[in-house]
Image 1 (cartoon, rainbow, N blue to C red):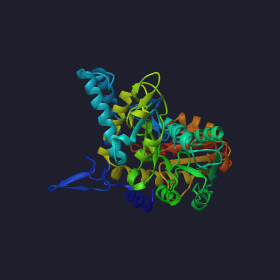
Image 2: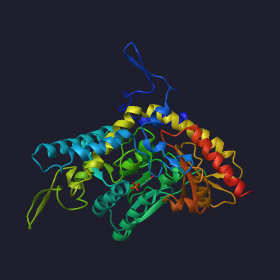
Image 3: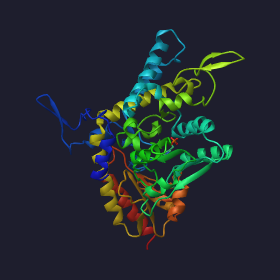
Image 4: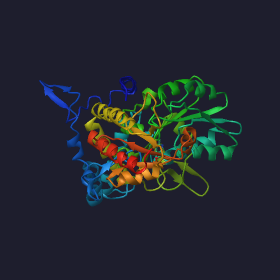
Length: 444
Ligand SMILES: *Cc1c(COP(=O)(O)O)cnc(C)c1O
């Protein structure tokens, strides 16, 4: 990440998390807490992640597939075990101690998410299964109420399939049109083109914050401002952004923000939709069932208040509690410590990969984070992935659920390394050594 991006991120940050100094990189000087910039103790972080001890055949695991899912710290694993071994009960319905405790833990986690995103109120935080479900919720509920024949939804060329297909389904159902803003050869969004697409028929702009296949960080605050000038609401897919940078939905002024717990060092099966209260109030329920009602008769059902209107059925209580623990962990380490470390890995990795003969990086935007996607002349990405795995290095190969990006760059697939807070320069070196083996097997 460039210094420029960091300052942009700080702008987007509201101070939440800013006072939280890493226990690793802080010194107490007469009562004042002072951060010491290079004091990120990655080895200490690594000890929190038991899986990083794992061997893959004869090699220590080098996990560089964080954009697909991150590993979980002990603090999250312990919270999950404690919840099931000591606190498991269904919520919101019991008057007995255990159920009250589970309900309190569930509600407390919602407040953690609210503070993490700096939402105005916890009723703006809806728990879902993942980002995909968060986006589908908006497509169904907002879409069927506010989008009609001839209307338009604007997205970008770098969206994940989960921010393409729900809109295509909606457009088919209501006779609306999908408009796609182009990207340039570096993987940068062409903002002026996006602006031109936002017109009188536009009902929603939906953009990714940080691209999972290119690493591009989109100027989402500018995009929201652009859309707001035309009274168009904006959804941001924050699946990748939330574990690399502070996010403040009030500063961004967005209407919806989607995230997925398993990329945020939390459990699978739990996601979040932030929605501006004015919108959520006007949107019909997404699913019907228990917990989302106020009263039910065969003649008429009235719905529960926010956010419960959107949380039908028994939720993923353990997942919510585990997500709360993941957010606690992330904030304790602190983005002010994580972001420079990851930026160093990205810069180091970019330089190192550029030295590999016949390697082409896909995604070279000026503002990017975490992602090192590439193709190698003469070797299919799947061969690259398989060969580096023999050295214990885990990278993802394929289209990364962004097939339009692959078509745009004229490649069938890419190999993608993606870094998180626990990765090291030594692991990048291991990747480069493994790629040298690929080069030996597929000489150019
Ligand atoms: C991972 C990802 C998603 C989908 O997340 P799920 O957990 O599969 O719902 C959506 N968008 C982006 C940018 C992603 O990286």
